[in-house]
Image (cartoon, rainbow, N blue to C red; front, side, top):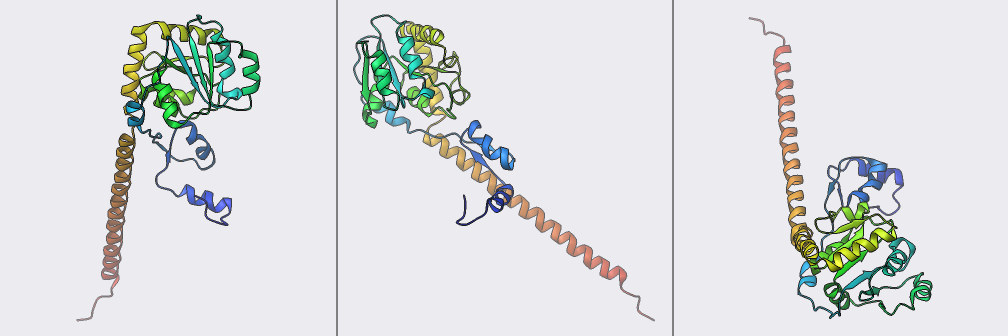
Amino acid sequence: VRRPGEPWGARQSRAVRLAHRVAVSKDARELPYRYIGGEYEILYNGVELDDYRSGATHPRSGATIFFLGRHEERKGLGVLLTAMQQLPDNVTLWVAGTGPDTARLRAQFGHDHRIEWLGRLSDADKIARMKGATVFCAPSLHGESFGVVLIEAMAAGTAIVASGLDGYRNVATDGVDAVLVEPGEVEPLAIALKRVLFDADLRAGLVAAGQRRADDFSMRSLAERYLAHYLRIAADRSERRRMLAEAQERRRLSRMLTRVVSRPPTSG
């Protein structure tokens, strides 16, 4: 936290003296580590899982992919839309969100009647679409420090196909609770989507593992981890105080003994 008017050097010096440091992801840890070093505990962001498990489900007709994100290059929507051209005619793609690339992408792919452009969604509609889709696809190319949206899809009970970015690997494990592909590669993405869309056993396994994984990121789990962290801090401070008190007592006894030994003998 920067105090008003505090120079950068003073803030850096204060940060270096911190006894405990927390970051919300491995990527988020990199910037402060670069400047002040030190050890960091990773305590990931939490998600209100009940919202995704108890919300309404939007109906679908057949195999459906859901994309949710800003329409810009780094989110990989263009890659997904291109991959969609390699998928069967009975596959539907729901595209939520807007952004600087919306007009261009709609002009390029607007002829495809299988693609539904949803625009911005309310939280309730987002959850309903997430729960209603067969597959949630997160094809980002870069710039994802943590995969909150993957946790949301896991909690919603939806299978995931995503890019194998480090930020997403904080959450998902390829072949266990998601299928991860090389970022920016159209054909591997199309193949992965086809597998998950039409292999019911694979999809069921991903969903079951994903729901278990989502539990690790519940608000309750996050609160328990922070409580354990604070208790360790309190215990460490208590131990340091005890050791300091013992050291001070040893110094006091040492000074007392020194005075006794150095006292000149009394004459008889």
